[in-house]
Length: 372
Image (cartoon, rainbow, N blue to C red; front, side, top):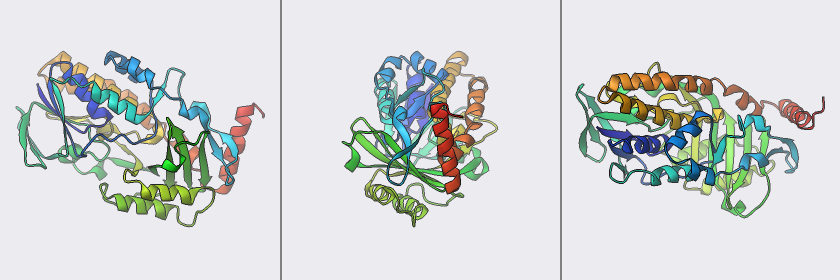
């Protein structure tokens, strides 16, 4: 079949790999001018590891494994360690694989079959018309095309979902937290543990890996209206969230964020849809079932979703209705598990008062030493 995939993130690239290797002609259309390589390390867990293995990529993934989270600690305003990050919050088992997002993106992109899959950057879907026999697509560039299937793998703010399923607000559940990330080149050569510092309802930190460093932020907030493509607006949101807080290294980290042209901001939000397919269109990854980064399972869901979808399309041939239904039945339990486990992580990372911060640190120290 001739298949269009919207989005060249992990979900979109995995779909293109899985569908292209099964002989389908796959076009990936990506709004950005290039692959997005920024992001903190991500985790591949459970059956997602099996999915990567069946893609033939497990050896390459394991080769890029990092163990950054094992060297992460909470610090006080003087930078002194006050509590460890419990490994149970990070990994479910020793088999979980942590690696840099950029490494996984490159592995998937390099693995695309050259004869059956291509990426078209700097373009996006503008209209979709599903007439039952195929989907007519008009792109922002003015191009047009007709496809047997369209896969929306274009993230939490999916354009495909909006065109086919309706406004994002109908399916979005905001979890009251925002996450921001920026390169911090001034720290790139510094060795040492990753540091996380809290003030009430906010967190700032420095993560170091592979000779680079990033400034990370989280803060509690009600939903904020902003243009997801307006970088200056996103930076202002972060600065406003930390206004008046100058302890530890917060001013320095904010300066790094303001200077980074690749700055990234996203809400911790989930997408809840009663179905992830309609007609000849299906959703994979955050577009269909974002669990929020607090779950630690977004990457794994993207990988299992792409694998299950491709398997079911392969099994049912041109019967896309059955294939989509089977994909959803297999993927739904993983999504439910991921979406149900986010709240404990939020409360631990973002205590709401100084007293709550002190209580958390005391509990973590006692747990680490085995003291009562």
